[in-house]
Amino acid sequence: MRLTSFTDYGLRVLIYVAAQPEGRATIAEIAAAFAVSENHLTKVVHFLGKSGYLHTTRGRGGGLRLARPADHINVGEVVQRAEGVVVAAECFEPGSSACVIAGGCRLQGALAEAVKAFHAVLAQYTLQDMIANRASLIRVWNRALPRSAA
Image (cartoon, rainbow, N blue to C red; front, side, top):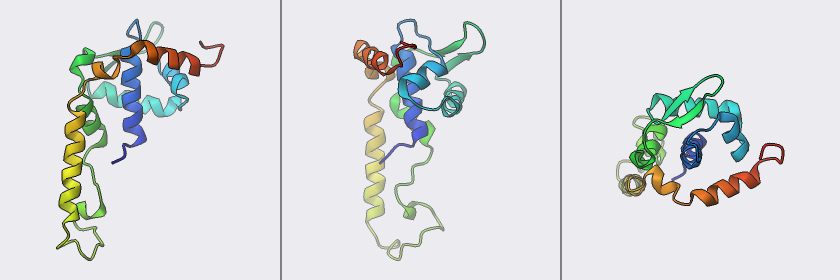
């Protein structure tokens, strides 16, 4: 299974904010650290705010902060909210499958089991687990930033 870029960026934003020593970051900082579009991150941050993972504050002194402690943000939950219903193959979409063996195929059951296992593994981790190597993450981000921003 492959995560959408939206979910990938959402996880990156949460990891970045959680790893910051002051617990605060801006969209511009995150975009620079990951070399991604600020416009795209704005949409991701909006979703994370509406979903209760981030507090967002506009203006001077504003930025992003976690809405709850990192050990209370479950990675599996974030992925499920961001991805929505996972369609592992076209046969999972009622009425739109063109597969001629859909009625007797056992692949659909195996794929459903695989998706369930994928989510079960992610549910074992919190955001706190993802930032256990905080110092290493910060070093990587500092190397990735342009000299003037670092």
